[in-house]
Amino acid sequence: MKTATVIRVVLASMLILCANAGRAAADRARWRAATQEELRRVIPARAPVIKENIETEFRTASGVTDGRGRFIAGVVMITAGYSAEGQYSHFFITQAPLRVGDVDLQPGQYVFGYKRVDDDRIHLSFYRASSGDPVGEADARKSAKGHAVRSLLITPPFGGRATIQIGRFLLEYRVAD
Image (cartoon, rainbow, N blue to C red):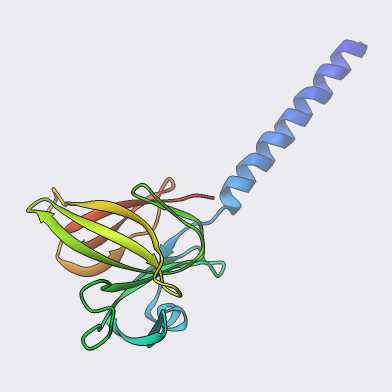
């Protein structure tokens, strides 16, 4: 009888642990597209880049939220006349650790620029917005599907994976937590 009781206690404990693990997974972030109002609270009208405040083009803003105050968002900057012209084109904010291509981005503000490599690929370079220090590089590939051309589109992660679309090119990212 004692063995049966121990088995019941172990099974009950395992059921509780499994239920809590399922609840923890459900409590994890459920990312969704951010609304325009939410993006207005996160995207600055002027992006702080090194020692300049570069105007952003809000109509190009895109982002996602976990519904608990964390955002991944970006916007095209109007760099004409700024030192960033030709080097950076987008302002990018993440409030969750990300893996973008082969680049690890900790929560913070970044800028990136890109150069076309060939018809099927662009090469992106990421920098810290505050200092301009390089963070890493990644390649985006031309979408095989007939995606609409967008200045910037950040899709919500599903199963931890998502994409950043720049024009016709897609760059995969993963939420690291």
